[in-house]
Image 1 (cartoon, rainbow, N blue to C red):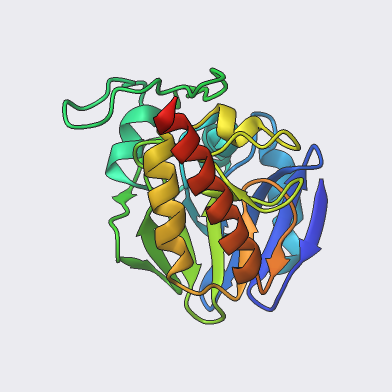
Image 2: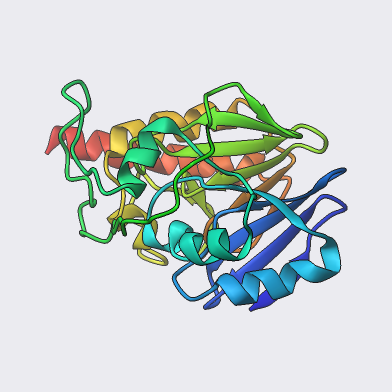
Length: 241
């Protein structure tokens, strides 16, 4: 596992070269954002030791590379709360049904890569849009999955975007299938919603972009703008087809 200290508040943990989770330093301890793929729990715990104790776990969404080690970590961190959006918690529990008002596009994405492993760990709290966990503001960003969330560290403007944006192979949104790194796009439930959420995130004028896949990007706004233009162009072509 690659460990990179990004700032006073952020540590990036990277597995298999492009799967990320993050440790966010708070005065009371560490917030772990996502849990990587299955079998990563012991490596995450070992990586956290120099930085402090994990005091809470936040899940951005329920795909296998974000909740894979959730049960292992929950077992090894008794009493540490697990937090997730209420909509995404249903997916973690194995309920893959779409709501009547949700677009009935393929939940697993156009490439079928959106895998939702059922987990035994149950949330201790649900994350709502606009709420806070320590210094992290919760931002509802549905599209990649129905209950996807992103997080903004209001101390320094770091945007932990989950899979709303990726930077592997360049900055793009999960509304498009980027040939340089197509996995997020191929796993996206609804491209229209994903684009709207990416556009919404741009409005927060992030100083740093910390995605689920790829390196952390400083001063990302110009690259986010380009990614949004590419997504809009792709969606126009899709609608016209």
